[in-house]
Length: 253
Ligand code: NDP
Image (cartoon, rainbow, N blue to C red; front, side):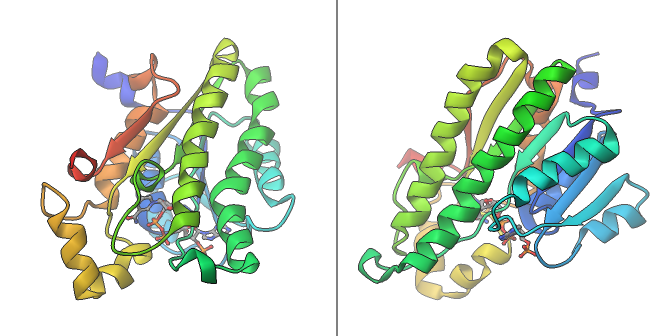
């Protein structure tokens, strides 16, 4: 049955930033599909506790992905404790807005460190183990900001970090196809999470964001998670190197 292709029974998954927002919804989707899911974040288990309470196989690991070696240690720890890593979802990310002329090195290092460097490092760490086990899936969370320059906020560094995630995903997909490792990315538009709540609370920004979205609403983490489940399972077995947009039509105009 084709619906069986959306199952992830027996798979081991790692979702960075899986404690709230989009990452938490992806962790839930994978757990509901039967995967054992490790979520990571810097501060606390957040909503992952509720997944455990619902009986899902979910565990939390603390890791600050800004620290050198943290992404590699996270991947290695999952493989050490679970024997394999089938699904790697690089979701953790941060937003930072402001004019480029005022965007200092500390902000740039933090933004690129979480949004791009840690994605590169986690993918790098997963390649040999996935190759040795016969394959795997990587899913990186990019953004429509990797395709277009959002307004009214200025966010050149964020946009560039997400464009880098998209190109990394396509490059790895090409490099790793012969190893049965699929690599895709998701480019969400505006999604209601802690990351965007400040923006939606600003009437000027909220109006622009909504007016520019043909569906005239923001998306939910669960809507992104349904796409992520597709991309992480055999349902998408012939897809690699795709950057899939989910934005209520925002990038059509
Ligand atoms: P949230 O801010 O709600 O969640 C971010 C997650 O990343 C949290 O679990 C957070 O946990 C973790 N995180 C942040 N910094 C670090 C760090 N240094 N080390 C480890 N973990 C970290 O964001 P969203 O759910 O909105 O975003 C998820 C992804 O989707 C991001 O990559 C974002 O750029 C992307 N995206 C979001 C959109 C939106 O509209 N919301 C649109 C397009 C893309 P903690 O703080 O405890 O570390």
